[in-house]
Each structure stands twice: as structure tokens, then as C-alpha cells.
Length: 284
Image (cartoon, rainbow, N blue to C red):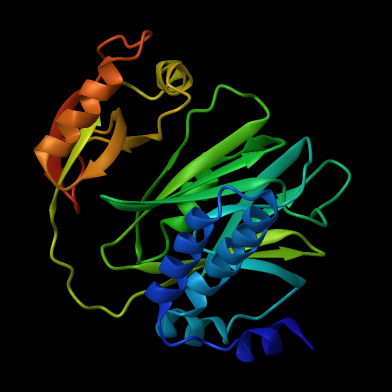
């Protein structure tokens, strides 16, 4: 069966939200048993695969993707790839498909994608990609390629102090959905973007953030100073960057998180509570 036929024969369950919620509940309820934890992990992996094919507009669009190579997995968040070293990250973009390819000095295109991590944030709508075992990426070319797509608002690099990892952020327009498909032989990622065109009502979001800073080592130092926190970086309205923790519905939730953070012995008072609309960048 070809890759395209595999897409066409994916059975789409009726309730995406129920699939994900049930997998999460089953995983949480079985933490006491190592055997069942493995079972829960399989459920979570299946849920991650089903997460995107349950969105009809995306699933239908994916049928039209010209498939080269063998499909490994389809996801919206999580990990994949193989352990590598010295990989160069490249890019292409056509018809709302963002292609991330990989090469080495010995190979024009690797057989497998390097180990990668995909994270999604909602305010604003963005995808965070990190690649391990990768030494080089032309972020300006990645930005130029991806910014040709009408559903992409912005692209910028991630500051990672580890010289064997690279990453970047793709900011999407409101309401845009995406699927990340991993291929092998050759190894690459395809990011399929879709939108139904319906307007999305922005909401107010509360977060912990730092003062604005230029792109540089200070960003990486902050992230490494709080390894247990889910820190991401947002571009501000003036083009600088701010470290952000959390996306809360109320100021009280954000204040509570700040109190918890302040209890850490190595907290240096970099963060404060701020708010902005989910479709906007924070101000300086």
C-alpha cells in the first residue's frame, strides 16, 4: 500500500476530543502499575496520531499530499525521529505545506529525521520545533520559505545554548490547524496547514513574563535557569523577545503561579504577571 493510500484509508473517529480525553484519563488512572503505564503510553501515542486525522478539513487535504518516502507518524505535538549528529536543517514551502528536510555532508537527504520535538501554544497560535543532533540551520531561508504561505504570520529562531540543537517558531494566523507528518527513506517533515476561513474571537490571556530582551544568549540562560518550567519566548510588539510561562484565563491563576515560582531557591525575580490578547504580541 502506498503512502497516499494509507492516508486515504485512515478511519476517522467521530469524536476527536473524546479520544484524547479518554487516553489522558486512562494514562492518569494507571500510574501505579508499570505494565499499565506502558499501555497508557500506547494509548497516548495512538491519541496523538488520531489527533489530527480527526479534523476533517485537514484529513481531506492530506489525501492530496504527493507522498515521497514512508510515513512514520502524524502528530500535532510530541517527539519523533532518530538520534543523529551533524545534521543540517533545510526548508521548502508550497501550497500551504511547510517541508523541513535534513542533510549531512555525506547525504543530500538523510534516511531519517533527527530527533525532534513539536510543541503548540495558543496565544498567539504557534508551533515550536526543536531538533537535536542538528548543527546548522539557515533561519533566514526558513523564514523566507515559510513566509510565502498565506496562513503563516511570522517565523523566528529559538535560542538554544546546546550547539547540537537548533529550533524555530512558526506563528500561524488565528484558527489555522496543522498536521506534522514524519517520513523516512528519505527523512523529512511535512507541516500541512488548513483553515476554514471562519473568524476567531480573540481572548485575553494572562502569563508570567520577563522584561523584553534582544535575541541572544540571555534568552537561553533564562530557559536553562528554570529547567522544570515550560518556558517559551514570544516576539514583542517592537521585535524583541520575552520569556513566557503559562497561558491562564485569569490574573489570579497567573498570580498563584508567580507565588509558586517565587518559592524556588534560585528564583531571581525576572518574572511578572502581564496580559495581552491571544491574537497579538505582548508589548514592551
